[in-house]
Structure formats: structure tokens, C-alpha cells
Image 1 (cartoon, one colour):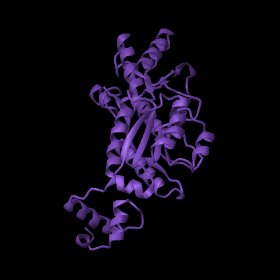
Image 2 (tube, helix red, strand yellow):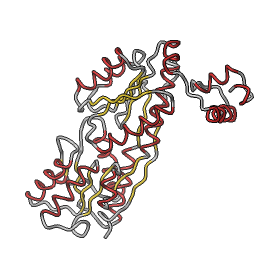
Image 3 (cartoon, one colour):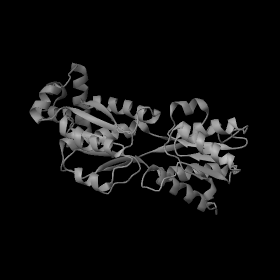
Length: 323
């Protein structure tokens, strides 16, 4: 293989093990030789040499969520490209579940963990830095020195709200705001910033809190709002499942979407594409690939400086906001 690529055995090893300090041109030649010769790295032998299992973990709140299911699938493909195996842990968004991912998984069988946290305090993450190769996902910007991959949710919410305002909507109900750092807080800040850009302030009667980001929570929140006599002209939901629930509640009340009320969400799950839902679409494939890449690098080089990667997004306008 080294002879076919015109490089040394050491260079081949560096490329196969995804080590840095190899030029793009050299890496491309080696990978072409790998493909031509049908080489597959011996994961067991490599693990014995380096004292690693070759197994990575992805810990997400719930696998029944289409967003996290798609993320897990993309991350599994990315791990395979790096010669690793990915295991999935469901935390249920609970402190104990996230602790298991941060502490128990890493101490038993995996080389590192990609965690999408909902409730873990920053100090707990700080305690694990150095003990566990770790990559954090999501909007909670941990300042503890961990590798982090996320979409800029504040900017995305600002752009999505700006779209609703551009359609003439002014009474925008918001479903999913949270006070604690994370998704709900980031997206709320973006929404408020867009209102301010238009010379508006949030109407607190249209601030709809929910216990979780599921369809049924969107249904209940919008039904309660309508039952109280406050009818919005738009509903901005902080994920697509909430938005799909909101659409159901509005139509069940005899209101048309978007004629009477526009609805928008986040995530661009498959169901939303067929339902005509306006949404924010993150580059989920890139997010998964970057998370795995950072984790593999952290496993290989624990002392390197942490990285933060913001993946791109786009506002996808569909029939739920424009008739």
C-alpha cells in the first residue's frame, strides 16, 4: 500500500489512524490506495496496541424523537468512516441518565462520549474534562473547555421570527421557552431580538411553556391558549414536533393554517417536509460528522485545545406560513 501511494509506511499509518500533520494531497493518495487494495484496518489489533476499545457513545435525550433518531443514524455512519463502532445511550433528559453517559459509560467500555445534555450543570462537565474524551452537542454553551458542536439557535430564531413578521404577523405565540440555559432560552432570545428589530415587544400572554418538546405538548399549549380567548396570528414552536401538534390544535379549533394562523418550527424532520411546515433546517449530517471527528481527535490527542464548531442552517419556507 505504501509503495502504491508513493509514501512511507509511517505516513500510511498516520492516514489510516486519522492523525494530523498529513497534507490533503498525501492523504488523498493513501486513501485511494486503501480503496484500490480493499484494505480494512484491524480494529481489534489497533485497540490492543493503544489500549482502546474502538467504541464511541452517543447519548441523546430520547430515541423516539425523529431529530435524535436521524442524528444517531448519521453519527453511526460517521463513526464507521473512522473505523469505530457507535453505541447509543438514551438519557431521557434526566440528570441520572446524563451522569451514566458521562461517568459510567466512559469507565466501562467506550473510548469517548458525544452528549446532548438537557440538565447537566457546567460544573459536572468541568469535572469530567480530562477524565472522559467528550464532545458536547446543542445550544448550552459550556465554558468548561469541552469540544462543542451546535447550530446558532439564537440567530436561527431571529431569522425565523423575521420571516413571520415579513408575512404581516404581529401576535406571535411562542411554544417552548425555557429559563435555564439551553435550546429554549437561546431561541427565545433570538425571537425577542427580531421583535425588537421591528419595534415590537413580546406579549407575555403568548409565552407558552411546555413540559417537553413533543406533539402532545404542542397540542395542549395551543388549546389552552385558544381556550383562554387569546388568538395569535402565528405560532413559533421550538421544534417541529411541537409545531405539528400546534397545527393539529388549530385545525381542530376550526382555524386555517396559514390563513388564520401561521406555524413554524425547528429541525426539519422528515414528517415536516411532507406536512408543508416552515422550519429551520440544520445541517444534521455535518453536525454528526463534526462531532465524531472531534471525539476521535480527542481520543487520539487528549491534550489538544478544545474546538467549537457552529454548523450552518437555513430557514425553509413552506405552506404553513405562506398561503
